[in-house]
Image: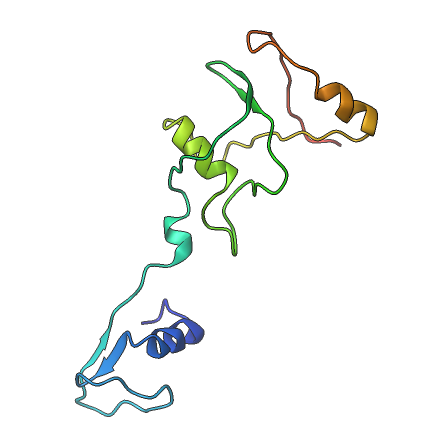
Length: 139
């Protein structure tokens, strides 16, 4: 099992997912020639990270090209170590099933920098208002 790390294999042994000749071995037991080793691989959390989840979104503007939303504090943007579910990406995959998940495409996320900007950003908006923005790397 060259693709598995020692720590992952040790965890599988501790979880009882490894047997030697039908019995659960202690973690440090050496395998002898002719013994049958069986390993039940559990799916890794990260393998199921990009699944749609019904998470409420506060959509400010949406059209065929973009979606702008008011991301609540504490909502993790994308799956990662310790946060494999319940992210903004999971919510967007549920809201727009055809969303591209290409690593070649990037998305923008904005934030206010001052209290005044935050206060003015909280005023009620019309969902039919037209906005445009572009995303470029700062040089």
